[in-house]
Amino acid sequence: MDKNKFWKVGYLVLIAVGILAFNNRQISFAKVVNKDAKNPLPKNIILLIGDGVGISQISAHQYNGFNKSYFEWFENIGFQKTHSADNLVTDSAASGTSIFGGKKTNNTMVGVTPDAAVVKSLFEEGKERNYKAGFVVTSTVVHATPAVTYAHQLLRGNYQGIANDLTECDFDFMVGGGGKYFDRRNKASAVRKKVLTDKGYYLTDTEPSPKKLSKEDKIIWFTADNDPPYASEGRKYLPGASQMAANFLKQKSENGFLLMIEGSQIDWALHANNGPNFLDEMKDFDNTIVRMLDFALKDKETLVIVTGDHECGGLAVNTGKKFKDLKLAFTARRHTATMIPVFAFGPGAEEFTGIYDNTDIYFKMRKVLGWE
Ligand code: MG
Ligand code: ZN
Image (tube, rainbow, N blue to C red):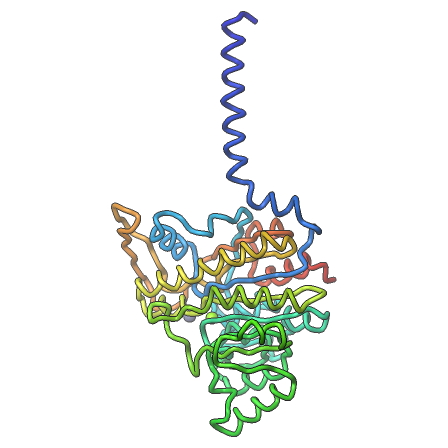
């Protein structure tokens, strides 16, 4: 090799090493966690559901944040097919039953098969296996998405029946609206309140203090009587309550914990075709995602999964000249049937790449938890 050629080759090698090093820096996040993980499998799972969130929703949110979002921190990304047993377009009851129970069912059905057999949820089984479990939502605690983790009803609108089921679920930390189903305003609500109190629950309609968090074993924080307000109307609790839930469940658990967090009202803003409210709800949800990623990064034993339950609004992101110059177009005031993304981070995250049915999310979670 002549001298000239030697330097040329050397130069090219240097550039290649530089490019590799730069890329490695970008992909370091998940690798760091997996390398340091005490165990290649997760002890805990935090599953965040952005109700109604598909690819366009994430794109719009990303542009709205000057082309940045915490969704970018994930490296293991897949797609789920959301259709229900009786329709290409699912509702949140059927899709939630699939994600948390591994069975396709008909729209409106909560935790039951089309022929009304009970579908035990991952969270219910977790309780039997001595895990701690809980959820934080921005809907009422009896709305379809939280309900699929503990209830078994033919109709998602049977809030009384779902509220009764809640008193039997034994979950450790629950946050959401719907306090009116568990207070003294009528006989049924008063009975539920008594059942929960007798079981040792601390029921509160204000944020639990640090003292209560360390003293109490089971907490329900009702953030509203009915539906909590939109983020744009001053609702702020989702990121903080989610952090509180993760810390609480970790502190109280030996075996591990399962936590569901829902940005419930993203879907409601999409149904209303309300772009500004939708973007505010996405921001709130994303601010919750980063808290959970931070928790997982420190904990090293927690798998964080972020997905939706279906697309809503048939959203398109049309031309604009700048990132903030968003032209959102809605093609529907209801859900659509498109596949939606699944993001996973932490031990076991690789399991969630590819294209699969929403029911597979349940089976993948079981697999990485080591449940056979
Ligand atoms: Mg929901
Ligand atoms: Zn909806």
